[in-house]
Image (cartoon, rainbow, N blue to C red; front, top):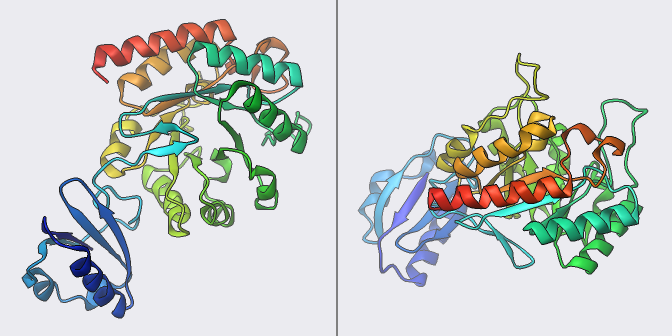
Length: 334
């Protein structure tokens, strides 16, 4: 349930109303917008007398919300959320490109790639230190050493960094990482979601291989319910019967999620297609669909990459992609 307050309602009246809701055992979520203030009610709202609530002089309207996700729901929070990552803003008209290698391999590799993607327009550096691999014999990442190399690249270039966490026991290693990534395989690792929710660190949450948008938003709700509202959603392709590409990129998820939630939505065309030559067209399409950002895998020598070389573009190719994306956004008036 949400209660929309009339314009001009003062803070004392609002706090009095919140205390009344809390006396009934309800949790409240307050969203102060440019034109309206919305109080979202979480819990058993059957005890709320809607008629009495609507009769109050400060109430403009009361609506029941049937969706199980509340804090992530746009009905609770009409204005788009802007996630601030060390001064780099994502969402609410702020578009950013996240770029870098699937795995951090060496110092020279990550420093060189960081410099090149920054020069081409990337504003956030990605790099995997812990890698979930289908085969136990594949490269699993440099772990703590990988984090240290990312931090060195951040110091060298000024780019905020993002890396994927695999286990809540590794959370201490991510204290200096700017964005914690929850991968597709961990989208419903609820203990991990709760753990990152207890930090105030931005979290990029990837959609699972076979998960619905509702399930993605419910996973975001796990993070937000712990107090962390700095959540970025990522569409990275889903598994369908089609096997020509690695996954099927669901670009319809971008406008659908923008309708359902106030959280920023970025698209990962690299994991979605699994084929580097398709990344450019899918990145442009994602920008045209209204995505708040892109995540693109870039490697200085894809054929020799220790992981996901087939979907990685070179720094030169990334420069072409970034330029095209800028033109698409300009043409769309974004």
